[in-house]
Image (cartoon, rainbow, N blue to C red; front, side):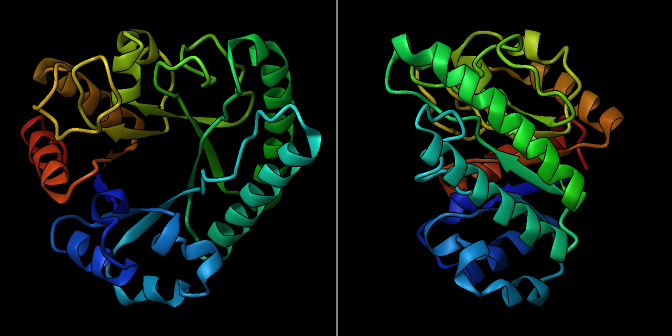
Length: 245
């Protein structure tokens, strides 16, 4: 299945964004930030107005599951807990979560220890809600965690492969060896996480065909996660050409 992230329509309100997505595909991933923060806005009734299935991208602003200050880490876990409860109450299966960041490379070891604690907390939340909590790999910048497949043990949580992020770290092929629950599809030139429409970067169509075939076997959703509507439509068309439904 192909879906589109509301990120492509960040300049529109959520009703307008979902209306645009519904014209093009049958699934929307709501990036729950700003005017699209469906979790905290009290506007979740909007969702039933559309003939769409949904996944939710949990908030990222002010959320850091790798924070070395325990108060901040726990606050981030609470945001994810609220997001999972929202999904549970609306029969939304997939919740995408970022693994966190740190102030500098010298703080990576304690940040990873904090992330390990957060993963244990998220396992408990998964068990309580039944929501599939999926952790996303991050782009190649020194402050981010989980840039390579071996960086963390997800335990019973699942994995979102962001192919653009992996391209910046030059390890897309390595990530494709993992079991993948969900995909974010966009392109770049390898040096910056630009979320281009697919075909405007260097990942290449043969890799996309391989990804689509793997996603079909795994029954995973392929989300066009682009910064513009034009980019999203380029990605959707490329996915269809590669054999996605």
